[in-house]
Length: 206
Image (tube, rainbow, N blue to C red; front, top):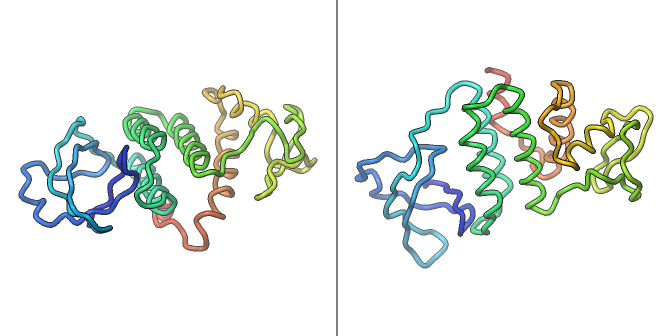
């Protein structure tokens, strides 16, 4: 059984019986042209053809890519097309090995934001929970099901939220990226449930 993220069919699982006869082995993180057949829920992969450059991710690049794959596996519904996520994932995989650490972290946060948005859990970074505009000089607390709440002891500066709102995130500092990471981890926790992500264990080991 192999899982694929496709542009037109979303996340699908295919039986790969007999596919080893192909001359080109299937590799993770590589774009393929595939064909499959079957009328029921369980379909069979019949052919694959690479339409991408050879890509071998190692070290932290591999860990980040596996983390994104696990998010997609856990959160995407079966056989539901999300072309925006498909395109965002393709950009992520193509750029991850060519970017320094800070840019990698930003690329990852932006992909998480896109994934949550496409699944119906996006945020309006311009306003707090009551509809008041976010102030760049105030701090905020994030509450699930509510949004951003102005709080003197809040850990999220309004300035960061406004950068995401205006898509001017290219110069986020290491500290700001860490805050964005904590925010997205909180947002994802409610969707992922109590079962921990296996890929996060690799961050500790790595």
